[in-house]
Each structure stands twice: as structure tokens, then as C-alpha cells.
Image (cartoon, rainbow, N blue to C red; front, side):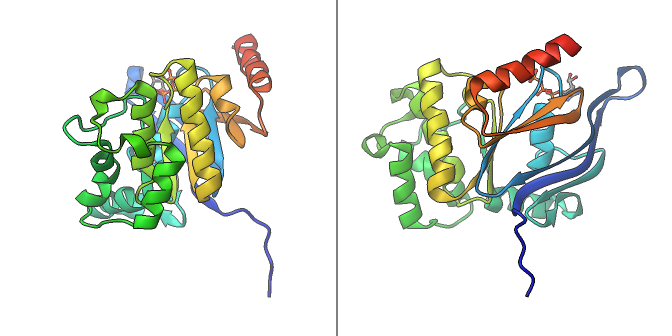
Length: 249
Ligand SMILES: Nc1ncnc2c1ncn2[C@@H]1O[C@H](COP(=O)(O)OP(=O)(O)OP(=O)(O)O)[C@@H](O)[C@H]1O
């Protein structure tokens, strides 16, 4: 029997190229990126503005397609999927958290959390949902409407919703971008707990070194290329690495 110590990747891209526009207006947002996001970990994607962070996240998550190269969720190649299968994969195996909370104002907190499951025609796993409500600390708010919650609480609902269907990987694009620093810390702490307590995978785009310090690892992009990776980041180390980009650009 062969034993392997290789860490399973929840999502990855190989030789990812994304070109927007044509001719004079052509932008090479991703220029040959190969990166894997290990299962059971929180990975942050950092880099200067315009370096391709959101493009990488969207292409890795199947929200956008690559110009060339390949994107995988687990072992499933996204470019081999027709629209229907891609929709099912996004629904069943991927969760999303965006800067805007995107909650449905007329639904309660509980209904917002289970909305993806309801749309998929299932009830989800009651024990999982129950544990999740404790992880996000929303048990006493379940029957409130989003407008009755603070921004931080609303984003916690969005995080719970993203994890509700036990996805293989949750993609978060600037999840603290609309929050004050205290609420942002709460949501980041929550993402970290969700990864540790539920063994799920989170990939998060951020421009904030303090946010990136919550990750197990940071990957750095510059000009559409992967230029560095940092294990066990601290805000200071990430800030120093980002300053080096300013010097070199
Ligand atoms: N839909 C689009 N059409 C044309 N160009 C685009 C499009 N989306 C992104 N770009 C360009 O691709 C490059 C990478 O953009 P992207 O949003 O991925 O960067 P980012 O690192 O997330 O930036 P920021 O930190 O400012 O959000 C930028 O030059 C951007 O202007």
C-alpha cells in the first residue's frame, strides 16, 4: 500500500489565464497562475489593486471562465461542465460570501440561512445546521429580519448561509469590506472557527493584512501572477510583503 502525505486540494487552478477585452483594450488579468487551495484550511489571496485577486476567485469558483488553463473543484474540471452541471456544482459543492451581504430582506435569519437548501429542494442536515448556528452565534436572532441586525451580524448570516449545504469550499470576496474593524474581526474569527470546527475550506480575497493574518496561508498575486506564498501569516509580515510590491512597482 502506498501512503501519501500530500494535502488534498479543495480547489485549484492550473496555468490559469484570463484575458479581458481585445486589441488595445486587452487586459491579462491572470497570466499563467497555478495554485491549489488545501482542504480544511483558510487561504487568503492578497496583492495590489488590479493584480487579479477577484478574477482568480471568480474563475476558481466557476463564476467566470478562464481564457485558457483549467480550474477544478476537488477533482472536477469546471471547463468540462455544461451550464446545468456547473449550476449544480456551484449549488451543491461551493459556498459564497461577498462584500455585500446579499440577504433577502423579507426572510428571517433562519430562512436566509437555509435558502440555498430550500432552493435545492432539500432540508439539509439538521444537526449540521444546528451546530452552525452556534458557530456563527446567531441562535437568539433566528427570527429577526436582516434589517434588525448590525452589519457584522448580517455578514455572519451570510457566512452561515454559505456553509449551510456543507460545501467543499467557501469563496469569500472581501467579506469584511463593508464592516467596521470590530465587526470585521468578528466575521474573520468566525470564518477561522468555521474552518477549524467544521473542517471546511475557505478561500478569501482581501486587501487587509489584518484580515489575511486570520488565514493559515496567504498567496500573493502581482500583475496576474502568483509571486509568493506565506504560511502562518501575521499582519506585520503581510504588511511588509505588501510594501515590497510598492517598492518594486
Ligand atoms: N470585466 C472586466 N472587463 C475588463 N477588465 C477587467 C474586468 N474585470 C477585471 N478587469 C481588469 O482585470 C485586472 C484584474 O482585476 P481584478 O478585479 O481581478 O483585480 P483585484 O486584484 O481583485 O483588484 P482590486 O483589489 O482593486 O479589487 C484589472 O486590471 C481590472 O481592471
